Image 1 (cartoon, rainbow, N blue to C red):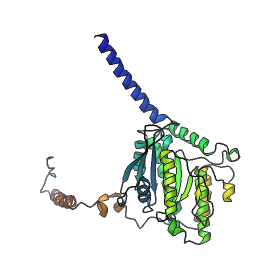
Image 2: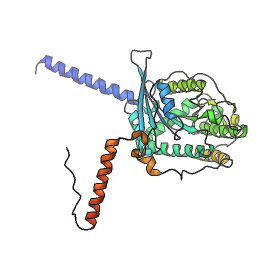
Image 3: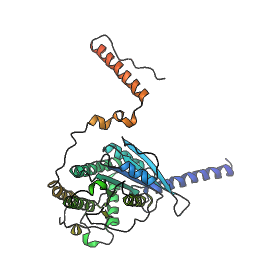
Image 4: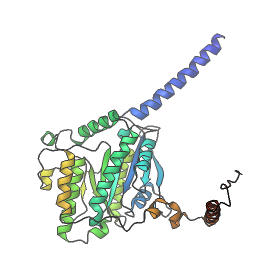
Length: 351
């Protein structure tokens, strides 16, 4: 081999090595990134898709999310490289779907740059806490499926430093959720018509839960122009790293706005003492459900929730007709097998 070919081979190997090093840095560097992810879960029909469409300035009409939707947005940054936000909207609350979104986000950047956004329906207080608990349970299960224990510990330690950099007085008061977390109360346009006592009860419970989890808290309505702008600002902060507009609103007669680290149990008017997060959340739950008992989801048909074929947004007449015809043929053949007139179900050759 000549010196020229040997030198060219070395340059190719060097380029490959540098490329792999750059890719690995993007997936692990917690301080610098041009890509971030927002994973959205929560109440059904609360306006998650509409909020995403407004943020990404999509003009088409939003449709119900059956399984999981993926979108992305780009924004020119300070360098020639554009910042990218990956938006994963999970429909059914299942660990496998949420884990797929978490794993997908980790393919291009560090989990430190992933934000989990939980959107709850303020207009349904009788389901609010049950949905919050379901979201947290599934999120914790999905993290264990997606990340190893060392990664989860590193995420949690990083959240502690970020959420409480100078407030030594409350250090150790809470155990933050490992991923960046934001709780969004949707349908504020309906919620604002509630009586003052109910708004205060719900507001205190959500503030306390958000503080215990190291999360931000935002009220939102797609029918309120100012709240739509505020949601865009919040999503831009989590998606592109832009500065969050300074401001706090803890007036229960107005849409709440409490950024991470700017609240405390003392300000909320609660005192739980030192304890594990599970105990604190259970105390908040008892305070809430004593006044607002939670309903179960007995009226929902699991088959309708799990099978996209039952959703009118996903109807395909030709495919549905062929599927029904095939199911009818299989039913007839199964009956013939049971009666001994057929040995097996014939499987057509692939076209």
